[in-house]
Image (tube, rainbow over all chains, first blue to last red; front, side):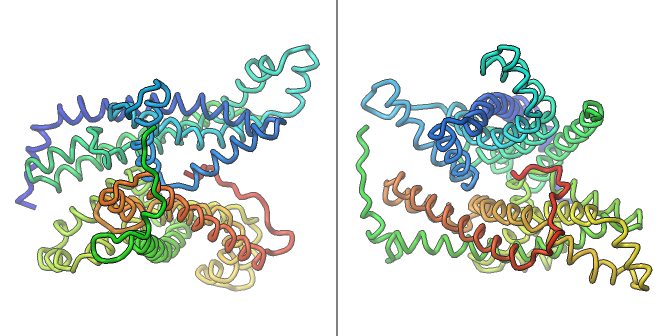
Length: 229
Length: 251
């Protein structure tokens, strides 16, 4: 163990956290919010009585859930410039930054997973709540927005947060695009200084502490918010 | 959009004298091989740890909990690096040198299997625990009353019925494992994504390449789901298949 040089962490931790961890957290939070909004809309589509709508949403969700995240990352990495060109009417693929590309990927990917959670959440609200809303004369969007979704979110909060912890860990896969997230920053330092062992162990430790603390928090929240029926 | 589609690219010759189609098929084979071996490791370790978490021995439960939390809270990619780069340095030097001298595909394949197997085992352990806990307490008592010893209670009573109950969540863990093998691409395993990446770099036909890789994953998915459904039907105990108390969402 004597050859280990843990000074490398002392030299680089500012870079790791200021550049890397900020990127990771930004990507996690933004794509969790985006994925949640899109996923909730997808869940409403899946539960819709309009057949084509539920079919399209179902196909999208099942397709994305059947593919490995790395493959999806590559798909969007190459697709997004073309989509950008198509949206802006440009004849050449549009250059998109690494962060934007990753954000689009994770938002679209997480939407599929959040959709299934929200679908279960919406279904966990008793049918009578829907009927009561309609009986009061509310429209579909009012019933959803004011009666069903608030209860669905409340029921699903622990699972949504758990999925966000999974997302936090999964963002490390942007490594394959050579982006500077927390792991990416550590890999860069590790390769520059030839200190793979110390850096990888440090990264594992930090990820463990953060994820474990978050999961304890979720457990506490679950006990606090569980409704006794 | 000015993208030159060419679906015949799969029959072109790739570097190494085979066609691109063969390259991808080889990647598929590595994916299946890695997933199969890791699944065996995950099932055995997962059962062991899952049982440990339901025994009456506090130290075994605590050890099991630590195992699960440790493997669940570190990203898979970081664990892959730990197995590949760090593990050979932490074991005694002679063993570490021996590990580093294993010839290339195997020098990558072995750490990949270990990483994926242990990572998945923590999830299997949670399912096994949930399965055992979902059984009525009377099962254990009845078995003990019959004079079975602790190991026999698990071997003959608890595990057979809990495995039948947790077959559906185990199926989704297997599907996750197959998808997760793609992470081994980062340490240089030539699995499906790795093969697709190399084909894309040499042939420049990004979308055709990824489309076929996607198709392969979908077929793999379908085959696993179908065969597990068959297995489920064969093993079903009438009146004993209920919803499992699983708090985790497949990811």
